[in-house]
Length: 126
Image 1 (tube, rainbow, N blue to C red):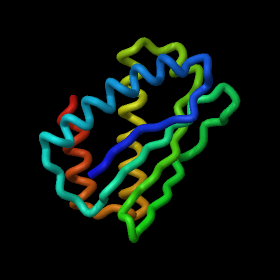
Image 2: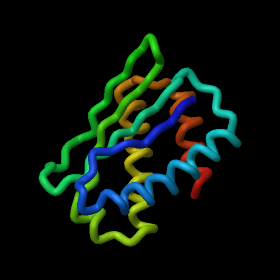
Image 3: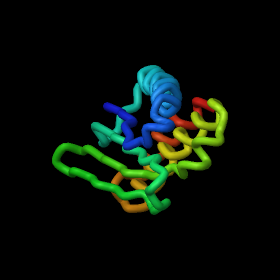
Image 4: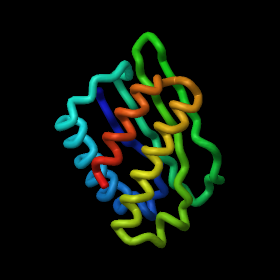
């Protein structure tokens, strides 16, 4: 499975997001490789918005069935991210990824088996 975390980030906090996102992404990709997850989902892309001018909204999901690709758009509160230390920033990013997977499951975009493997993958990081 391919996995990516992207973002639309306010320039004021972009560097902090980039550094912490890269740490989280590296750890999750390493776990993904170690766990040998075999699921129907071929690609998961989590797009995070952290902007001073963006209201907090629910997670949006786009699932492309033929490609077995899921894209989620999530929002992290700007002030919360800005005030957080690096560890807390990483936790916010990880929570956003976890929330995305929960929404995919709740919207019946991924199977219960795939959901279980993905949540076990994320839980193994803790």
